[in-house]
Length: 62
Image (cartoon, rainbow, N blue to C red):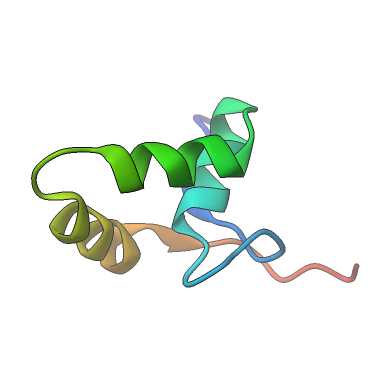
């Protein structure tokens, strides 16, 4: 089974998109957020698309 990008349930500022991408790639969520801020062009549009298309992570007991 191939892993998919999921929104983070524990590392989120707005919707968990950057935290989920960071967990997938094993990097800092701060770095992903910084990339989104500095990304020229349609960063807000890309973020909105990811918010609506990325699956939620399963609920955790922790």
